[in-house]
Image 1: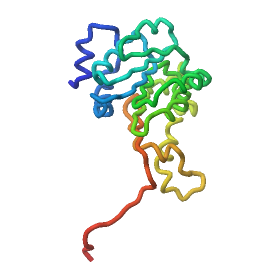
Image 2: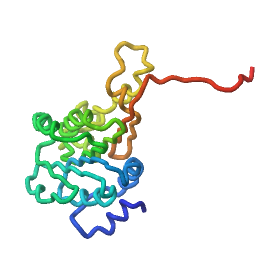
Image 3: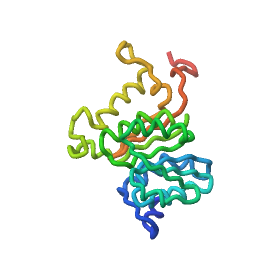
Image 4: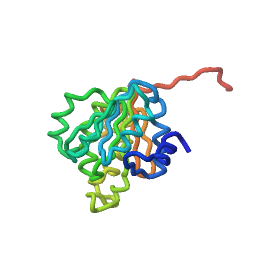
Length: 218
């Protein structure tokens, strides 16, 4: 049981609701930020318990932003924790708030889980992710649920929306004019799909190259 999971199991503060297998995913991708001056945005505050969990996990250098549509969540502000009230499915809202925000090192989308919310949040906030940051979209099982605007092979669900990113990650090697290098190709280092989660890690990239060392055998 890792540190985050232990915190969750012993939590007697504000409510936290998480799928248990998420904790290993968090630890794998977030551990390098512990103890640093990290900026974190979590979309979806709910009862505020996960914001307290991140504060404890990342330490005193962390600045945490929580975003929720429910104005009651504003009362969860405390030292290191800032609350923004707004609609993640509204582009105009994002465009108005982005100039007031710093670059984010970690963005976690645990908001409404509707397809348009996940897509708009990613499109608006991925450019605000720092050059070595992590963007984590969770509860992607809603891509298979009609009531969230999803459904298996529905072209509007987030899973289908994200599949072309795999091609963009490899666009450097394309010999087809339809697949060109994009800003995503230049900035995305990896994509990790897990049960209900997609993690995209940034790292500045130059055109990839290969080389050989050593002596040939023939």
